Image (cartoon, rainbow, N blue to C red; front, side, top):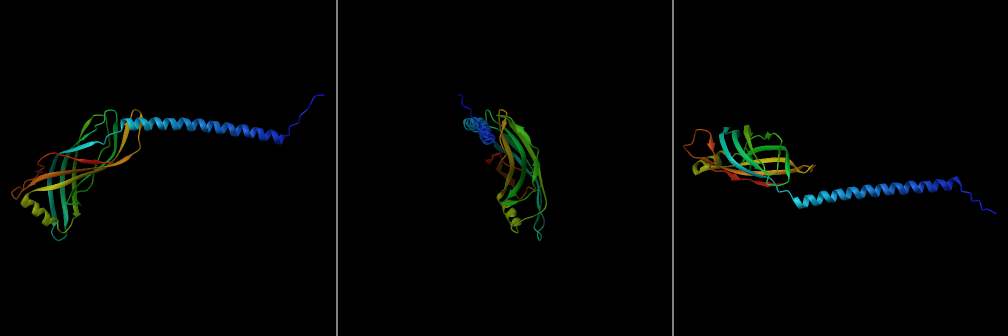
Length: 213
């Protein structure tokens, strides 16, 4: 006598559900393994290449005006032109500069408004020339500003800080990283004697800037 087995609809539904769940788990495991491997490859490439931060150097800074509008209100009018060299020291990594804001400072206080430089791409081992004209109109400064400038005039020089804030992205092959904030600080030593009344006042020498990311 042959044996007949009867399977209920409820039992079939359970078996079908188990197959679907197993299929989803396999797909999830496959995609997880693929993306984990891809991230690992990117991380290894990143660690091997290890991008170096860009290098900036100030070649020239000219002061055309740096005057208080009145001694009572302590408002400053200024105009400064600067020239910078930007270098990408990496052999196989490019750099996208997405945002560049430049301004000048004196003894810890901002003395020009921010100037925006156009974004650009810098290939490996490439050097670019950057120029900016910085201006400030009726900028509030400390009460001691006039005295400090007068003291610098007697010593024959004034030290101006030139600062750049921006965002960059690394490019390795076809892969482009997320955005990183960076800051550049330069010091310009400008001749500023008692008899020097005709602008511009020019920086005495070029300087290497510091860069932080």
